[in-house]
Image 1 (cartoon, helix red, strand yellow):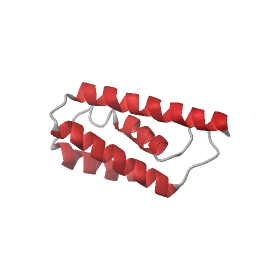
Image 2 (image 1 turned 30 degrees about the vertical axis):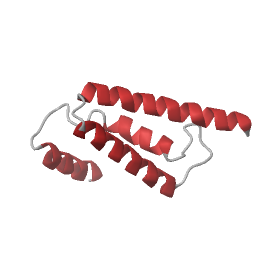
Image 3 (image 1 turned 120 degrees about the vertical axis):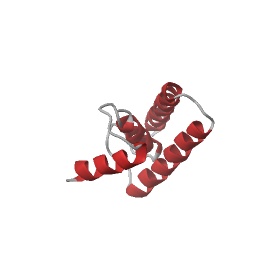
Image 4 (image 1 turned 135 degrees about the horizontal axis):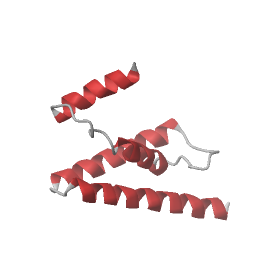
Length: 96
């Protein structure tokens, strides 16, 4: 049921149906969760941090779109963000 609701929201957002619509949404969601402080290796994380991560990624992606950056480069920058977030998580785990 949630997939159906998400599909309807995406359909309304892009204004038409496309089989390739939403293919990068999983990258954005993983980036938001990792930026929010949840470790990909388990053990810690909270809902408030994830919410803050979602807001950061949403504002960041909106800014890139507003600047007129092509979606390929937006995905590249989002991938770099997740690499930096995971590297930061690894450094903090090594210190602990």
